Amino acid sequence: MLDVLRRLGSIQFDPVAVAGRNHDLVLHARVAGYQPSWCDELFERREIVEVTNKALSFVPAEEFPWYRRSSGRKGLRFHTTALAENAAVAETVLERIRAEGPLSSADFERQSGPTKNWFGLPENAVRAVLEAYTVTGVLGLARREGNVRHYDLLDRLLPAELLAQDVPVRDQLRHKLHSRYRAHGLLGPGGAGGTFARIAPPTSTPEQVGRDELRRELIESGALVPVDVEGVRGKRLVLAEELALLQAPPEPTPTVAFLAPYDPLLWDTGLLTSLFGFAFVWEGYFPPARRRWGYYVLPILFGDRFVGRIEPRIERDRVQVLGLWWEPGFEPESAPGFGEAMREALGAYLRFAGADRLEWAEHLGTERWLLGAVNGR
Image (cartoon, rainbow, N blue to C red; front, side):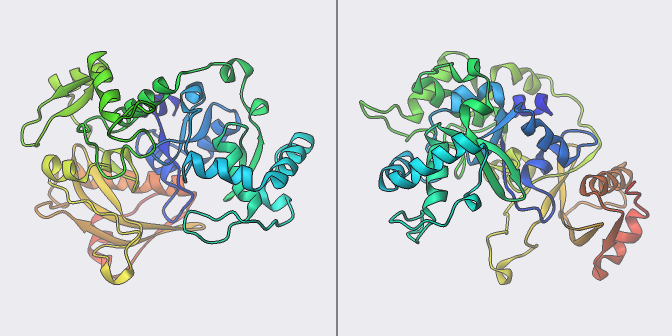
């Protein structure tokens, strides 16, 4: 797990667990036999920490000094203002955590104040202060209980020698930009969508370095190598240590993986279309009437080919398959090795979900017959 995380740089955290939490699905697609409790255990052992990177993400603990400059979800100025506008609340919060240890917002009496959230609506002042202290490096996340976050002093969570590392802001920004290329593997200079959010603006000022300058430094240092890919417009940037994979690609493993909606491989939807012929749109934010597939649908990767989409739902001791769609031109019954690989993937997914049985929607009778019995244990 740590090897995967170190290679990717970071994994986006998302608490929604309809088909499994995003970070768990990312690891499940890459680590044989993965169980969600493993990630929780690494977090409890402080071998991974939660930071703001592309979004809320897990990174290896040894990389924490490169994430000390964090803007949070709402920007550094917002959080600094929140502490100033709620000074009395901030002092109380810090005193209690210092004396009592890890606390959540629920452990404080509800406070009212002028603080507003990102959408301009009233927000609990304690929550605003806790988040602001996290962004400014005073507090850290000690544990989660469901979606409830418990905070403690950062110097009680991480080793002193780690916290003592003072990484210049410019190096932190460059490291974060490099992490996007680490995670995806074949991003273009402009990224895709929100790929480069919370790093630096595309242009620089005398007080602030821009992404273009940071990228140029990564290329000049040899960390990133520009390449051309046949059939793909524009330059792509590859990690220097991974260039050999393009020059002599290994044979694809004939296994099936279900990919999380925020899996790094799915960031650049344009590349998915041009390189894989796969049109990916995650419809979780769409109203039901606009969804072509479903709410929480996972792309199916077979070897080096996207062959379809599946909509699984974890319901206590069972997994329901609500939908299954094959890509045009893919015939699962005649694809060599696919049936066995798909059955193995479904069995692994049952174990991942802690479920005993797999249930198919009524309209999937053909798929149920094709894939046969699946053993979850």
